[in-house]
Image 1 (cartoon, rainbow, N blue to C red):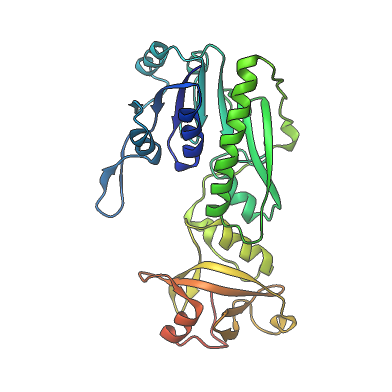
Image 2: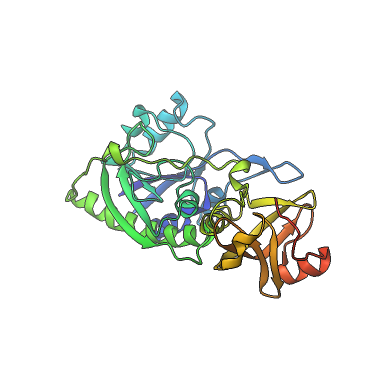
Length: 311
């Protein structure tokens, strides 16, 4: 089977590697154009372009995948299948009509839940215990195409968006391999999504990382886990922004006797901060413009003490 792969982010790398190792032929990898990144604002290739180069694959980087030139280029590849994973551009119907068999997408949620750009982050932030991946046939509506198959995965209390994304990327490769087998044999069924159950996971904004210490401790910890590495859960300490990179829940009956955001205890294990209800035990912090440190280092470096206030 001739396959054209469209992807930009690193999430799809295991899927691309699986395709290369299979009996199928990856005719081309389509990725977003190089963009200026980091402080020097030098043009840097997307993660999937780097992966394609390492695998010896041809790369195509159109500004607009739906332009006449792009459509003609893709038609010339005569693909049986378009595989789209974390590409970053919506595909028009003329593009979807190009492959002989189908245009499919692997999405990092159990659709119709968490349609959108950041399903892994929002599933953690909202306290979900289960997630998964969905292989669907693409439509022109965002993440709304009919489902070919799904695979589930637990969300562990220790998971951050980084660890969960890695697990789901491996699961996505499994789902894609299985789904392509079904498509090739013509033995798959399509299940329409239930629109009444659709929820959304928009791209994270910097403000989504802001901690409200008047929220329950589990919600705060979930926000910390879901905002790793960006935008980073953040609060104020002595007038400066500090990011919280690691935290856990602490059941402390006395927390309600203290103002929300107040430090109620310090130890080498962490900084205990009052929430509503419960408390949050902070393990890793990063003061604005400084490196990430353990709670113990933070206590010593900034003379943090009970009674100090975050927020």
